[in-house]
Length: 455
Ligand code: NDP
Image (cartoon, rainbow, N blue to C red; front, side, top):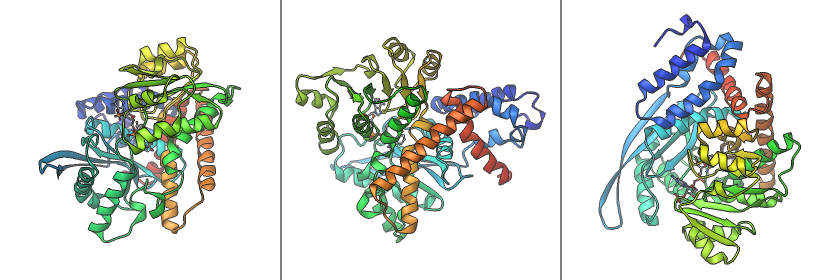
């Protein structure tokens, strides 16, 4: 790699770094995409603050501190042995112990976990709390598996992972395919192996044994609060607006709940099979019964809801006209065609509940059309923020009341919105929450890295 001190101009050196990322991390398109998106916005801050150009700060930031890949063998209910792959990427611990979720989904590979871990560094920095960035998971598919199979998989996964984590080292949590059930099994195995009741080693625990109230709600609630803040900054209110939401998991469910509570009307939800549109607004109780109790599909929602709802197999929620769009399923689920459709239908704000759900060309289109765009690393940071509050409660052996946690969440989301808006303004790109989030997150991590020397 070119010695950093010989760089003639920060923009060019960022291009070189980008080329290096692609060369050194082949076949990891999602990681390239996430890194490119951050690097593209850093040129002004590197030009304005020359102390960041040396010594190799950006080069260190894009290289994970540690990458762990391991075998996860487990036995299904018929006695057949399966072998999955486990990952934990400990990306950056300048601000605190590594913190980030675990994803169990068949699409999981190294590049996806690295993109998620990289995003997590900046997201965690934006919360203002003391947490570094990490992410993990496996290509295990929990869909269609019995509770006993999921338990055996989680136990096998933790039998390797336990040696790498700890409340002062690395604290995993949930993500796609990892909810309260999986966190319970993972925690049980950690406790058994280590003989330690170490509450702060995992977050997303159930409230009865160390979990925080409002943690399940936090990502969805936080994203709705972020969308509301963006609208208010433009003199508009969320109440009375129609919203399209994708997904039907943890983030989508609590997004729908908060939208309804604040007077908006969420009219869609989806899964990988298709979407539901419900003109009367999604009936959350029915959706939760199907998804959380029966572990079913959204097509069942339309069957049971009757006249106001219809199921569109294979369709995309973005074709439903709405004022606000909240992608809450997975990466790259909203592309340029979808963005064009949303713009045509008069969308005012897009706020990312999922991680990197909007493709870069779609982000460009939305921003050029003047749509308020909230990037995931800011808009969905409420989840990890309340995870950090769960760690605080565990450390003090206290359990906070729900309204206290919710007030803290609201304060943190307001602060994140203000930080992003003010940072964008300071660097001459007012209203650009992507640049604001990337630069503000970068500055906080970069300052800690500079202070801690070349490590
Ligand atoms: P869940 O597993 O609870 O739900 C995921 C939802 O997205 C399901 O409806 C699922 O449908 C759908 N989905 C997943 N993968 C795909 C795919 N490849 N194509 C189409 N649909 C898909 O996960 P969460 O709600 O926890 O996570 C959703 C997003 O939010 C992720 O991007 C995650 O990284 C992000 N996030 C989550 C946080 C949290 O606190 N949980 C915090 C911050 C971000 P199906 O059942 O058909 O697969």
